[in-house]
Image 1 (cartoon, one colour):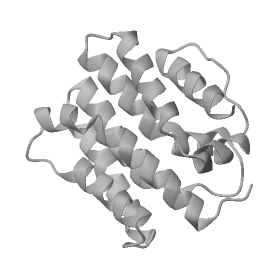
Image 2 (cartoon, helix red, strand yellow):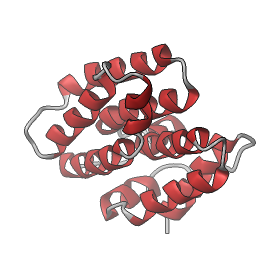
Image 3 (cartoon, helix red, strand yellow):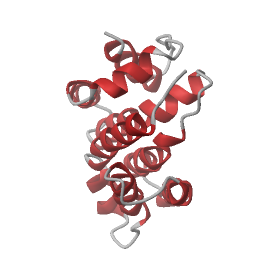
Length: 170
């Protein structure tokens, strides 16, 4: 699998766009915890070539720690979207389902956060996935075409991932 630094930056910008849509759900529950917002801001800086990739790992891990600590399912999913957005450029050349999760995680967790905040309304998540698909740059689609496809699975999260994965391959 081949991924240029420019494609990693494009993936990062899209991941930040997806994650940022869910951030208010986290910030409503933990207004003084800035770690998810810092992760999104960090990936945006990387996408604009203002930051190297190295610091993103710490930002991603901090946002994921915030997800574990917040105690609200929607806020947890929103913080995970932010953490995965900062981790998006860490995709490596070995095409595996785990690597696909790095790329798709921000959109999947943002969609699930919206669903959970709306009383587990699947329509909210489906709409968020549509938004992510419509706003995905060709670089993201090209990365996904190089990875193994994801099967539908049994959980709602698996369904969201499959919807996103299959649409981005077209």
